[in-house]
Structures are given as structure tokens and as C-alpha cells.
Amino acid sequence: MSLTTRLSQSAVTAVLLALTVTACGTEHPGQQQAQSPLPRRSFTPRPKCAQPAETPPAQASSSPTASTTGTPQEGNNEDRPPNYGDNHAYRMSAELSPAKRAKGEGSAALIRHELEKARKEGDVSKKRITAALEHLGCGKQHGVYIWDGFYSVHTGDVCVSGHVTEKELTIQVHGAYAEPQPGTGPCVENRGGH
Image (tube, rainbow, N blue to C red; front, side, top):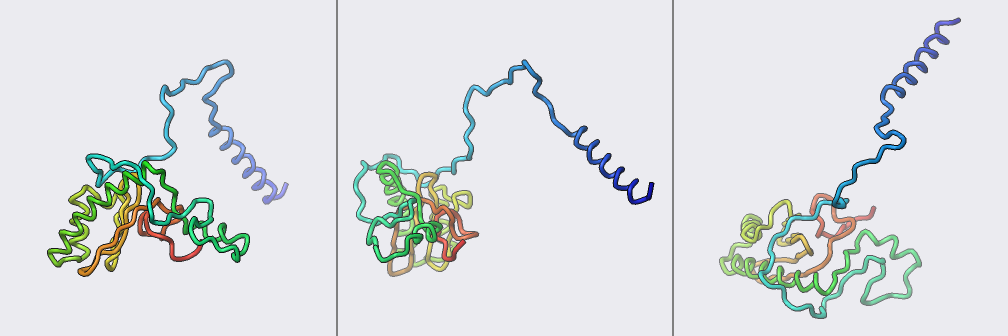
């Protein structure tokens, strides 16, 4: 036998031996597996912040929301190509139930109050906006993102985002994006494609 043939056979033997040794077989026929009494979640829920003491009653919102089906709820343009929704799905945010929207509006009111204080002080710097959100318990673990007057945070239920400058404060309640802008948290619309 040649050296190459012996090396090939040795390699095959080593691979088979490794597979045999590492083959896990913890289940044996007739043995019952212990089951967890509680079902396990497949995800870890986001921590909560900016939670209102009382949730306002659910009401219809006048602000447009995006749909997870890829079709805009407002201004549906029939002149779009048939795959428009698929190609722009990365920009769609999750729909909010009336109850979640109401809870989000309560969170938005708390955030608005804190950001209004910063505006009245004349300080809308990143540091001050961060401090205002931290006062409500919202930190990095909540996807807080602040850049050039724009802010966004995930309260554990919804996204609250907008702009804050010395002249104005905007605030919007919406669902998290399926594919948010990389490096920003779940509440910033992706500016690119996928």
C-alpha cells in the first residue's frame, strides 16, 4: 500500500472514531424524558421603562402606522410593482394593538414631560436627553438611541421616538422594526436595504 492510501485510511478511521465517541445518546428506548412544568419562551422580553402608573383607555390614533404585511395603511399606491411590499418589508414596523398603543401613549406622555424639561432648560444635548430618559429608567438595554436631535427608546412594549430641539419636540409611538438600522436599537427605521 502506498503512503497516500494509508494516510487516507487513517484519516477516515479517525473521523469515524470521533463520530462514534461524540455521538450523543442520552435517550434510551423505553425511558421517559423529564418535561419542564412550564413552557419556555423562545425569546427574552425587553425590560420595561417609562411605564405610566395608569394606562389611558385605548383610543383610535390619527397617526399612520406601518403594517407587517408590507402594505402601507395610508396612501396605498396601486402603481407600485407587485413585489414592492416584499422589497420594503425591512422598513415596516410591527402593528400595535389598541391596548399597546394606549400604553405607548402613556409612556410617550412621560417621555414628553422629561424632554420638555430639557427644552425649557435650553439643553437638548445628547447628554441631557440621555439623562432625561435615564430618569424614567430607560437605558442602553432599552435600545436608547440619540443622534443629532433624534431619539428613540423601546419601553418594553412599544417604541417612542421623535426629534427634540430648542424650538420643537416631536414624539411618535410605533412598533419595533423587523430590521432596524444596524447599531441603533429596535426603534430606528433602516435607511438601507437588506
